[in-house]
Image (cartoon, rainbow, N blue to C red; front, side):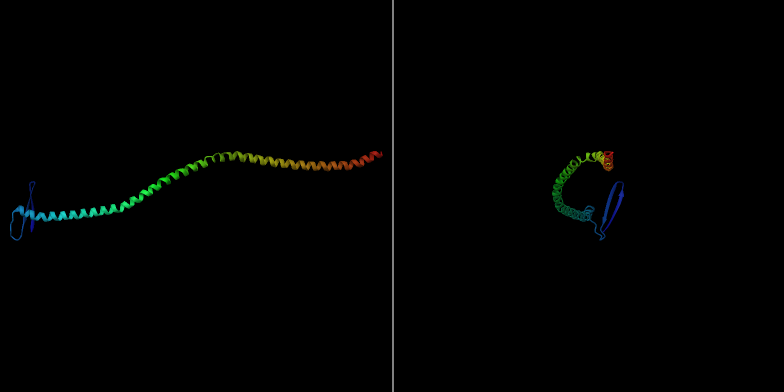
Length: 157
């Protein structure tokens, strides 16, 4: 079979020549050539559509369990978010009272340092007082030790 296409000003003429020497009517020859081609293309289209439908069915079959599993996942995600919000709120409430603590810590340290300095001064003054009292007692004992012979001499005199 031989096909040739000749173009004439916007007209396409199709000639199909059967090499066996038989000539059929152009309409019949054209139909007998195009019909198997149309059937082949229709079969190919149906095959591709079947493959597409099978793939889509498989895709849907696989995604149904996937989305079914997403439902409990998101159902659990909501309480998790609520717990996270509650945790953040409790954390904020816990540390809000603690905020003044570091602020008060500095004056407290200053007062403690002053207290320690005064305590050291008190201890130093107490030590000095004790030293002076010991010296005073020693001098007083010496005074009475010397006063006794003085009185004895004065009485004899």
